[in-house]
Amino acid sequence: MFGIFLTAFGALAEEVSNSIGKRDVMDKTQSIFTMGFLQLSGGWLIFLGLALFQKDSWMLSWQTFPFLLLRIILEIVQIHITLLAIVKAERSTFGFIRTLTIPLLLLIEILLGYRPGIFQILGMGIIVFVFSIIFLKHDFSAKGQKIVLCTAINAAFSLTLYKYLLTQNNSVVAQQFIVVTVILVYLLLRAWYEKKESPLRGFTKPKLLVQTGTQTIAFIADSFAYSFAPASIILAAKRSSAVLWAVLSGKNYFKETHSTIKIGIAMVLIIGIIFLMIQ
Image (cartoon, rainbow, N blue to C red; front, side):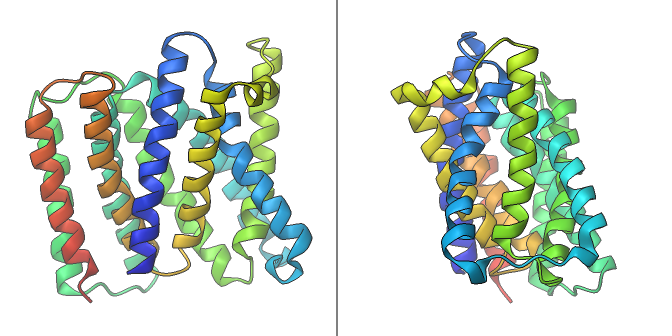
């Protein structure tokens, strides 16, 4: 239960950060690379502090390095396409389509030996049903749908690797610090050499500090949530709560249409989450 609450709170913080970043990229005041750098830098600093001052938080098994390397590659791809999806797709479309990761992740976990209960299967069925509605109804903008779909599929594999590495004596701090360090270098270099921007200047702007701070809260909450429950359940809580926050953000901040229908569909997703919580 705590893991689900943690990830739902993190989803709210992430929506605030994504909305600020999306608006600035649309207004051409920052690129997607600066946006990503600002969003991840706060979490990196926290994990750096944990690694330096809590020695028992750093656990790394070098025997699993090939899997860690594969995860780094997938995460670089994930951050790039996710940033594109945040900017190109409507907030509600972004939130709804990413629920596809949930049944994909559950399928992977079943193949690896996890046995869901009848209520969890029912909850997954509801989520799949909602996902099918998105592509059948015309209330959802088609803009950016394909790239959001790519983020949903890639996330299933990267999260499976993350969970596996946790079970092989690789701590949250060690994993996330290494992965995020590589991603930050990637984003920094792309911003400098491709967009001629200095993401570090964002720390001098109050609004961008809010963007960084809220994403930091989301990053920490999400990273530790996977330690409290199976990855499919945590991700289901994250995606479903993210849908509700995205619909509300889209309606109130980006003036998206068909909000009543979207909120109704989001409520159905929450019902699916309730079934997922029943053991």
